[in-house]
Length: 256
Image (cartoon, rainbow, N blue to C red; front, side, top):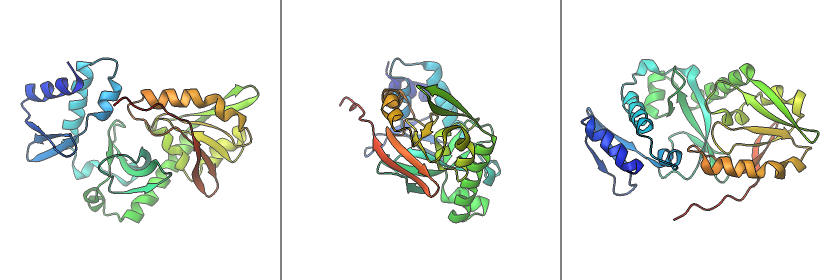
């Protein structure tokens, strides 16, 4: 049984009707008076090695939980900028390009820390925030996470390779934090280079150690290829005035 078949079976057993959107191929699931548009792309990548019925059931649980979210569940101190690939058929309402293949997207993290929601105009209206205000909160909240995080450094032939310990479930977004320098400079130097092959993977190293870049290429490609929440194989340079992509490791093409 495929992931799609297991998903549809789970919906049917719970008494939910659905149809397939002819343009995107997504499932349109009717819940109460709402119709949810669900893509299985990430779930299929996660379960590429075999269908896990319990994992599919938890996926459906998350979808249904999202419909129970009220305006009171949203808060300005849980707004963040996150990193997403920019090849989605439907773009987020609030996003800005970081590179040719990656955007920063305004998201809301649930109080339990497990549900990441793309912010909509309705959410900001409920919070009484403009898009500009929400952006300021998102950067400030990333800065708060950086202050609470710990940087560990592994010695690779005399060159420190840094990784971050944090409770934030999308640590890749920390490269956007305005105060990142205060976390990394002592152990890695400044400016730094970084890779974020998926949303919960972040390696950083001093820009002076360019030779380290090729050493980590295979790890980046492997993580990008197997992750259900992949971002990019790009290498980013982070300086005082922002982030820019300076190259990318070649990733294998997905089979047609």
